[in-house]
Image (tube, rainbow, N blue to C red):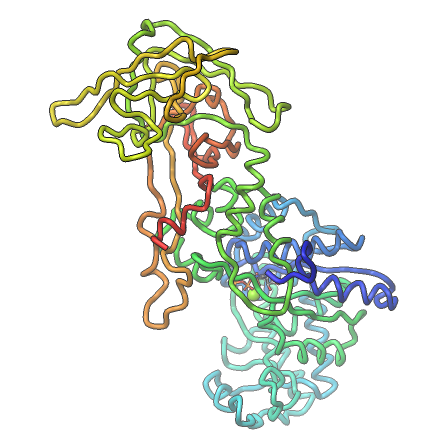
Length: 559
Ligand code: ATP
Ligand code: MG
């Protein structure tokens, strides 16, 4: 995180826009776009770009377009389009006008390719892909002109028309901009602007069998939409001269400018659609929205709120220096939001029976607890107390270590919001395993003036007679290594955390959660933040652990 003063993270794009507004550039307009390629689901890195593009437009009273950059039909699909649309909306942003597609501009782009040919600035090259690579040269060595570079305008027009009409096979020829094979910047060595792909396109159907390259399509689409600030990640810095070359050499209606910022890298995960797709295809996770995935839909299912993701993106700032952000920061962002906004509840995740011997069978006492300790407006919740209770197995120790603040034989503990109970008997099954605890409650320990009774500590509990049986899915980070792609010898798959999902099938939540809606979020007291998973059915609730109450990762790692 870079800060220019103690409170505000840097956003150098905003500084540039403020200069532009001062100097009256772009007639005072600010138009941005978010340009995803629909070849996968969006991830947390995209959230940074979304917050930057939409947030900038909002901040300066401008507009932000949503444009699908759909020039690779084989890798793209409607499923991805739908998921991206839903993710952007869920994050809380709305685009200007209709959803746009680069494919909306294929006619114009084709005309502009013809324009370049007519100007002698583009040619059809018939070198093979392999030969083209050889001719391209290297970082230290200039490239060589293709033998097809001096084809006449007429011949190029004829060949390009044939390309469009499907007369050639894929790879037989391409259209290239004629710039400079000796340019120091390899992107300017006659880049490919059209290639043959005999593929059905999700938007344009079978109209085209030639498709423009990213470089040829992107800036021109920006120009057509009147984008003023075309914001992309630093890998495109070396493409900027090419972006500008097209804008200079084509009859475009506006002159957009490209600005690059550092992409978000987050530790303990991967943020590359290609790698995330591998995890999905190889069923290492349950799908793109598996709660362990750094995808927007995965974070959503995990229990992240849109506000927590937006706050995180604000916190990390926008700079031009690449760095790695700690996953702990993202977790802290959701913890902060849920601490303030999630109602409290009790849930015993791994239960053991606690029988209250002085509470008659069938009797029931209701306790009122605040839904939120710091926010009275959330009201109260009613929790039933009966003879048969459940407590967390790990809240009992037969031989307690020093300073044990929970239940142990002969010891007393407060049941949160209810009575102090003292453990009087430990019941075992035939294998010797502890299966039940017997205790009695002290009626003096609840109410306006509980007796001056000092139990060791406070534990959570639920009534076994009146609770919601549920499954709790406890998630940890998906990788055990901070930088799972960082090892050249070992593949990122090797670092998948085998304990990234632990299922507790026999959890019991307090009865008030019975009808909690999918995606509603709670703090389970003493446990962490949880949300209702869409796998919930009428008969069985499923909760996902979003994050623990405190950052426990460092401890788990033994650091
Ligand atoms: P990936 O590398 O995951 O495939 P991409 O850049 O190919 O991502 P696009 O769909 O082209 O994915 O991205 C849409 C926009 O999001 C682009 O402007 C891109 O620069 C931006 N973006 C992608 N990844 C990140 C990231 N990690 N941090 C910030 N912005 C990103
Ligand atoms: Mg891309």
